[in-house]
Image 1 (cartoon, rainbow, N blue to C red):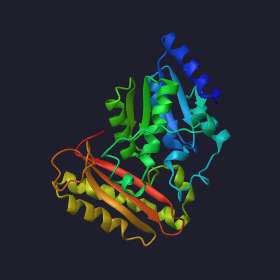
Image 2: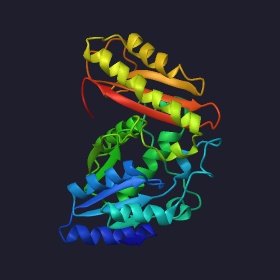
Image 3: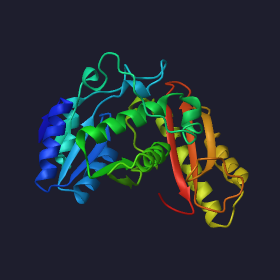
Image 4: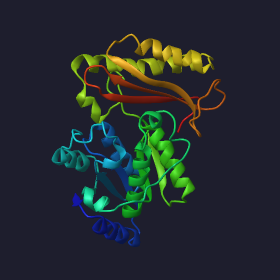
Length: 285
């Protein structure tokens, strides 16, 4: 497996691959790789000839009080995970290479970034869209793979890709879960043992909403109440939002008549860890 640290070298290498007829797949990550990331790399492996995994903790998607400084960066371990799951190239640029002095160009995807996580994390999706577009320009992938756990991120990137006519095929891979249903996340490592135990209630609540939907329930209020009721059984989980939103616009839905996203964000009481999860009711990504 090759490690590339500079954007110019990465672009030149990827361009040579394209000229030789090889298809390139990109899996953008911030490192701290787990089985969820491994599944994304495997998905890319199935869809292209050469797999590039980017490892870059992107400073411009973190708010001033968020966990940029303490975000885990086990680079050597990450390289081992990437290589074991079929990665050919790890692209790991430095902050100065990505955002040189006087950097002043950002990507704004309007409207669908205003709700859900965007409401409590102003500027977050501007940072996400900007860095993903930069990676698309640098790596020039034919395919890019993202995880459905970050549903709003997926929809923002899909909108940006469509609006800007970017020549990349997006693949959204299913959320990987622990045995008790908790969505795999690098931030799960922050949880105390009691928080980790109760965090399973998030998916339990979403599953209850799925069951109600399959039984014919179409009221967003009823479905959200079911989710809140289960998560609210724990004093360790503080609900930030429980929403059911349109899959295209992410506008709130009152009565479900088309595929809709049931999305949850919570913070834990002791460690202050922010956890998100979602399911699609009546459809898929």
